[in-house]
Image 1: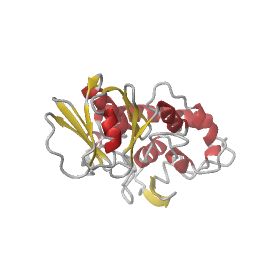
Image 2: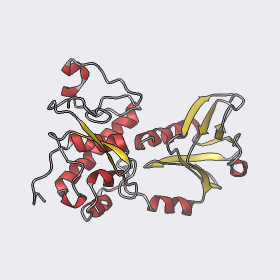
Image 3: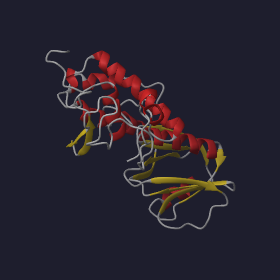
Length: 275
């Protein structure tokens, strides 16, 4: 599933390509067709992301709420748009450009009030400049749930997926099995700040890179990572391989129905009474 940086990149691209333009809107696949008729010819005024949710604002009508889920994809192209092929849920086009949305979990026309309701159910997003880490801290600091599970709970924190979860916990030396209430405030502040930096880099670059300069392939004289997700990482999908920092084999397990990766030496359990 795409992580939050991908949705923020999409929002920026929709804004750049279509912002302020009267656009043609259609739903070749059909399910979104009634809403597309209401939007056709309207101005796309704004595009924004909150966590893994994308919102496209149409003046005088409302917002298209998109959640890509596991299989959703958006492809931008030049105009004129070709004849639709396959299952295109939403097409937005002008004479110069088009964008096709395929396979989303959610594609719905909602009101401004409904948009606020969706966002009210989401935790703070490290990529939204005005979002504070405090609401997430209040939930995490009172919870007996593991920090690994809490970071993936979109009601606690928005936009963090499996890669950012594994990598930020490694970078901060935090055992993923620790209950949230055992984190110190200093540890949480460091996690939040690190996520902000890493995810901003993801928006800029289009992929997830988490290794520090001293651990890049060039610095270590090792082969670059070969993975469809791209980018250099410390533990994600590196189960059984040597930790880039200490050489200990990276571990994995199924945790809250997702694959968890960590280094048992670099992320040791905290001593009792740490907090």
